Each structure stands twice: as C-alpha cells, then as structure tokens.
Image (cartoon, rainbow, N blue to C red; front, side, top):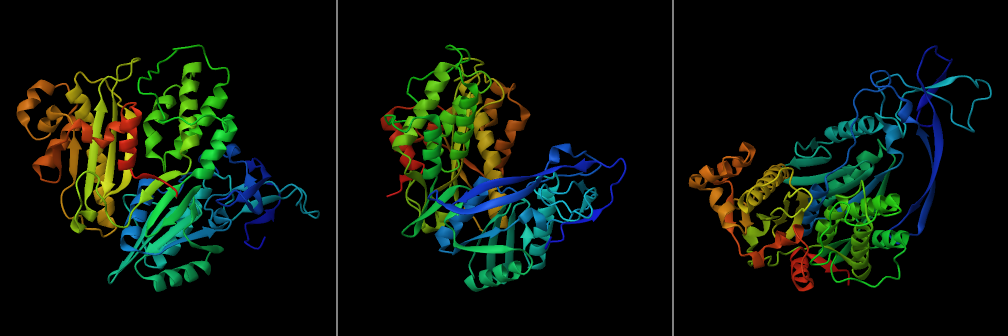
Length: 495
C-alpha cells in the first residue's frame, strides 16, 4: 500500500484476471540460523496470456564466471567488497502492460469486495516482473554514471577520471567494489533514496556461497549447502571417498535395473549442479550423471552416492582466490598476473552409448581459476585430433568472451592468451594448413581458431599429458592424479 502497487477498480468484462497467494519462508544466514520470517504476495503468473498482459521477459542473473573475474580483480587489487540487498525488489518495477489482479486473501476491501487490483508496479510471480525491476534499476544506475556491460547485461561499470567501480546484480542481491571507498559509500546512499536498500557490509554470503577471508585471499565455500544435500540423500554417516568417481567407472544407458526413486535422483543431481559454482573438482562426475536424468539406474545412483561420499569428506573445501599469483605450472611474474591462460583437453569417444567425446577446459586469470567446463561434444569425432580441436574451439570461444569482458572492466592484458593442449595434431592444425587436407570433415566453425593464431591473438602450445590440468574435466582419474590436479584447480580446505 505504501508503494502504490495497485488501485482498486470495478470488474472489467472479458479481462484476464491473475490470481495470487501468500508465500511464507524462512530467511537463513550462512550458519543456518533464522534471520527473519518472510511473507510475500505472489501472483500466479502461469495464468497470464502472452501479448495481452505481458510481452518481453528477462531475468537479471549475472554469470558465475563474471562474479569470479570481478572477485579475482578485487582481491588482487585489494579493493573493498560490499554486499547490498534490495528489499521487495520486484515491487519497484513499473508495469507498462495492463494487468488485473484479484484482491489478496485476507485483505479484501469490505467496501469493494468485487473490485480488482489494477497493477501499477510489478509483483513477484508476474512474467515481466524481473524485466520491470531490471529496467528500473538500470535506469537509476545510468543516472549515477554507470553503464551496462555488453558481455554480461547484469554487470554495471563506472569509469571516470581513473575511478573504477563494478556492480554485479543477481535479481535483488548486489555486489559492489571499486578503487574509491568514499564513492562506494556515496553510491550506496544515493541508491538508498530510490530503493529500500539494505547495506549488508563486507561481502560474506552471496547466492548460497560463503565468502571467507584467508589473510589477503578469499575462499568461496558452500559447506552448509553440501551438508544439506548429503542429509537429504540420507548419507550423513557414509564413509568418505577419495575421489568423486572411481578410476575405472563406466556408466551407460540401462547398465543395471532402473532406480526405484528417479525423482530423488534428479533432485540430488540438480542440487549437485549448483555446487559446481565453487567446486570444479566434481564438475566431470556431475556432468556424467546428468546424462542419465531421464532413466536413472541403480548403477547411476551408486555413482551419485560416490560423489556425495567424496563431498562428505571434503565439505570444508572451496575455491581459493589469491591476491598474489602463485604457480599453476610455470611461475608467474607480476606482469602476467593479468594474463589469461587456458588448458584444453578431450577424451576421445569416451561415451560407450553414442561414442561422442567429452571436452573440458580450465581458464586462469593470473593463477586464479575463473572459468571451467566439462561437456559431451554435440557431434562424433573421427579422430582424437578432431576431438581435441573441437575442445580447443570451445575454449577459444570462452577466451574471446573473457577478453571482451576484461576490456570492458578496463583491465589491459599483458600478452595474447596461451592455450595449452596435449595433442600434437591439434596443436599443429591450429596453425599449419598442411594438416587441413586430412580434416575436411571438421565443421568450418572450428577453423576460427586458426584465424586467431594467424592474427597473433592466441598462442596454442603443446603440453605434456602429465601437466594437463583439464584432464580432470574429461575422465575419471586415480586418487593420486586427482589430488594433484585438484590442488592446481585452487580447490583448498577452509582451515
């Protein structure tokens, strides 16, 4: 009512009326303690009709890679990290469409019981609510001198006379950092006059990820989330495993009787996917079990339990973001602290169901891991060289995007990115057209790698398999090998 969200109007004939309900939830802190009780009025947006009461939709969700890049830059430069929370964010969005809502249960006007609510502001649950809120927020930030990023719409950048500020937006959670603490405080004060803004102080808990200071470094941990997943799966008392996947593990369709609780399988695997935001060490194993969501078997559930048993023994581990670059393989100089280094690998024809290969990469900014992936390739490769080359192409696409992001953040990289590959054929193919005759069947899309190399915007170099970090994203490994690569991924214990 204070916000002027709606006005009551008489019933409109043939109008699409959206129903609503109250949703109650508990807001908890990083330790699981109840912070506050929340009651929220939510519109039943599924009854909205496209083209009538909503048009375009958009959700302001910042990319996880962008978050890690900004955190890495802030830690390296020793910038303060502030966390903001907008209370009832969606109620700030201005609606352009005509939307009618039934009066909320328990709050029906006794004088006008049959009237409808004509919405002026957006409500949670409406299809266009995230877009309306984002438009309102971005408009306010533009007036403060920020401009939106082209590489990530949920990133806003302020740059004026050597002063830099970065703002990351994930719906109503905001991270703000920059090289001028006074201007950060002024920005927060000015935003508070427009929105119901809560200054949470130093960044400590964001999207279920705990941000723990370790000296001048930061550790991103999801320890509470890990315990919740294990408890829901009923494996709290299980014996810890050395690695998330057995070295000789082979999973395939219908390899054993169907698992009797497929809903539990899907819920657990879906929760594990979110955990890969701070745990790159389980990325390959989670990607593997995700391939059997439609028909999980007992063998597949055993693989999920192996991941949970591994997490049970390493719940206190997280992703370390260092202030000073340490060695990944070679010792970095201060100048290379802003350089991009990538490792690309592929496991040729690893899937026994369709003989597709699994490709993976790890990309470092200085020595901080900022981007990684393990994914089955969409086409079948006829040679290991082709599989590796496709993996290189995926890595180069991510590198190109990261370079554009860093340029927008006013970070000058000191040299062309180096991409390390352990396949000589793929390494030669990236720069030597002589090999092209043997790979005519490779899609033309992948040959933009050679253009990058020819323009000296990329260096593709050979690396021994023993030093290939991306190996951990393409196949199950022995415990000793896994421990080595896990340390290279900057996955470290909390203590």
